Structures are given as C-alpha cells and as structure tokens.
Image (cartoon, rainbow, N blue to C red):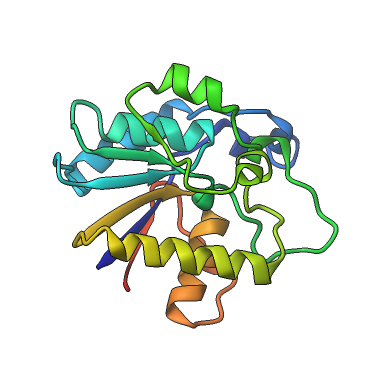
Length: 191
C-alpha cells in the first residue's frame, strides 16, 4: 500500500508570519486555490480512491477543489490534523491550527464523511501538541486501519508537521523542519 501525503495549498496564515498564525480558520489564498486545482493533473482521482482530510479549513478546501466532481471517498479525520514538529513541551495549539467544529464541516462539506471511529476528544484537541508516545500509538493504529482498506493508494491531505511526523514514524529516519513539504508538496511512502 502507498500512502501519499499532500500538504494543503497556500493558506492565509502563512502570508505575514508570525502575526498571521493568529488567524482562526484561515482559508486558502488565491494562489492556494490554483495549487489545489493543479493537483487534479498531478494526482487524478477516480471513484475508487480514498482521501483522508484534516478537519481544518485550508485542507478541506484543498481536498474539495482537487476532488471536485469525483465521487471518491473523502473522510475527514483528526488523526491527520495539524501536528507540531518537533513537538515542544508546554506549547499550545495556534488559532490557525484549531479544528473546525463538526457541525460546520457537515454543513459546508456535506459530501465528506466524518471519521467517527476516533475518540471524541480528538475532535476537540487533535494531535497538535499530543505527547509523542500517544501520537505514535494512534498513528500506528491509523496506518494499520489504512492497510485494512486494501487499497493500492490512499491519499492524505494534511499539514507539514503532520506529514513529517508520519513520515518519520514510517521511514524510521530522523527528520527536521527542513524536511517539510512545500504547499501542495507531497510525499509517498510504502507501508
């Protein structure tokens, strides 16, 4: 099985760092919309594909634009929500990385499935500042569950820190922030 992690398109929260990190629920920029549209050519989806999506506006928008008019499975899950990398003790989730309320996701993205097979607290807190030991456990479970889907490829629209955390777990390599993917950058790994 191939996991293909794709970082969301450019978001408003990246335009004036560090102050823009305080934006709550930032959307894609016009450039981010174009980047998401370009994914259609780079990774053409079919109705047999599965896409896991972080419950954050910019990832939801990226997946929506990329998968428009394709009847593939689109599953929103906090297991691929923002993750600080490397994890720093005593840090809080920034406003730009807070999970959107489930009711808003259901209303704005009615064709997306909601992953209710995860503990409810993950829908509130996500994995952003979760202890590494707990993250590793749930990340391994997520990968196992992906394997059970018996698909050749599974796509995951997520965030730079999350992608790097999963990549480090799966590959066994020690990675740094220099390994972060750029906007709509991707990383494919066999499991």
